[in-house]
Image (cartoon, rainbow, N blue to C red; front, side, top):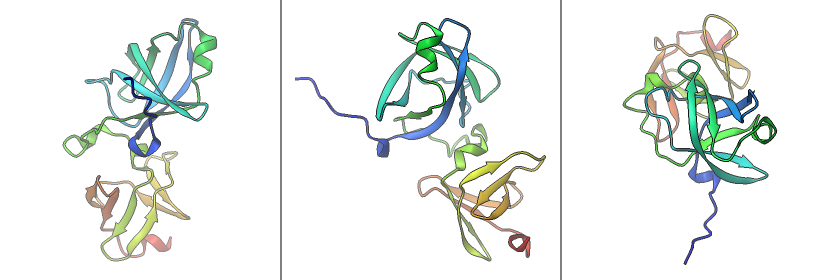
Length: 172
């Protein structure tokens, strides 16, 4: 008997987004928050009309550590590929980032809480500002440096970044 179990968002991890088509044979430029240059996934899950659908990867070409041109099975032209553009990419795999954390981009931390040693809970990271040389976590109306100098620990299971920020930084 075949199972009709639906893929639920609560069981997924967001790992990137589809950007735009590339060429006429169905390739899509995808940007990931995880470095997949060594071990790419067999399939990626994309939300399509409210349903999370696994799309099996036929081929992929790197464009840096976090961007890839991906060709999915059964997506054979730019029209089909356009329907998958500008969508979030998920995986149901439990990836172990704690051992190799330098292989994630700052976008990976959106949704993490920041707790400072002196100030306590600051809030949840809503976006990343990388428009300047120093990347910043946007937490409400505050901008916090995304620097190893200030990060003391990261708990991936609880999605918390612990910091030791300089006095007065939050008042700026």
